[in-house]
Image 1 (tube, rainbow over the protein chains, first blue to last red):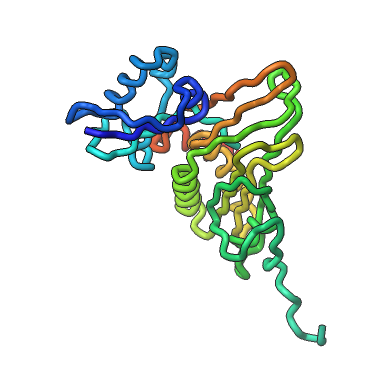
Image 2: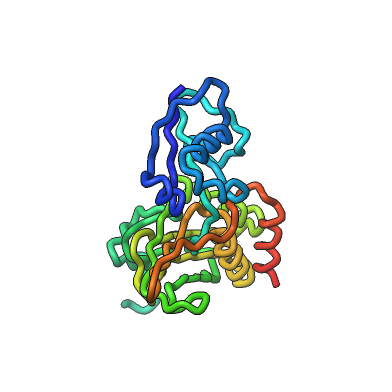
Length: 81
Length: 177
């Protein structure tokens, strides 16, 4: 299935892109999408314990199962204000 | 003004590119206007409006800061602000919040965030305003890219988890003590 991945802040810089389109096996979770990214961009591994994720612009658990066409965003620790 | 006539209302004061229909929860690259933000939530039944303006300062962690670039996941940030507004309304039912956050390059001394909490009672207004900024820092998907003398760094604070009741309780404690 096809998913759109969105990245922010330092994750965006590590990937060199704010958006990536990737093919994932049916039944993949947001965490599986993350693991795909880490395989591609090993420097992201350090964020494994601190990222948040959002599926289709809603905060979601990493265990959330993705569907074809979903957008999954990975968010490093936040620093607004 | 004729004797006995009501004075003009001040809340129509709009400036800095703000429009009268602007949303209470907003992410924008434009300069913030805290007076306009306050006007979005203040009613005739309110006795107080507490406002908070976060400023970009010229130093951080021993570094001389030149400016900050703010990045946001804007649609999710607005939803997060709405959640914070809902949390505040549950805690202080007569109190309303507005939260506006800046994106892009923000110079030293400029406002990065403007929050207003309006209530019939000053205690609730103060508490809700403090609660809101604590929650923004905990869960809003917004990041500072700090440019300082000699380099740049992404500031990374809390892992955002809007469902984390411990973080929410900590924000409430800060607001009420």
